[in-house]
Length: 141
Image 1 (tube, rainbow, N blue to C red):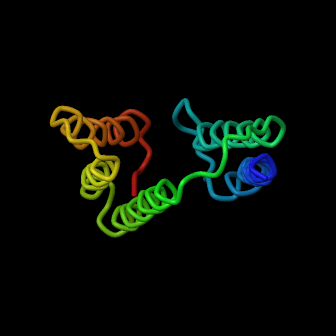
Image 2: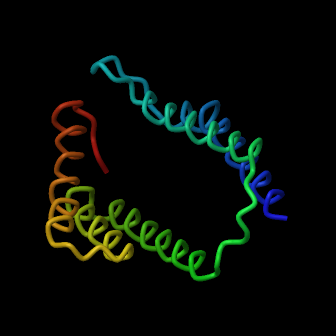
């Protein structure tokens, strides 16, 4: 049964990656002439990775058994924190909400080391802001 589930989920992600690459990303990105990286380059590369991962899971399923409910609930909690954080970024902007989102995600993963918390909460959002807003001159939400 688990191989069957791997094939179903793999096919889903293969179709999702193809839909992202062919329709969703081209429809949701704007064309710009400035800059050396086009806005659709990285999202399309990630769509290819998603599609290839889905194809791999569909063609080479493994029979490791079902995932424990505890792991499913923990993954659901992680996705809920992520969704709330993305909504907060939409409301307050990346600069204000991203550090709190990073902290919440790390705490959800039971990360407690102060150096990792500080780096991921402060340095990673700053690096993302610096890369997009300053270097690539692309707006963040």
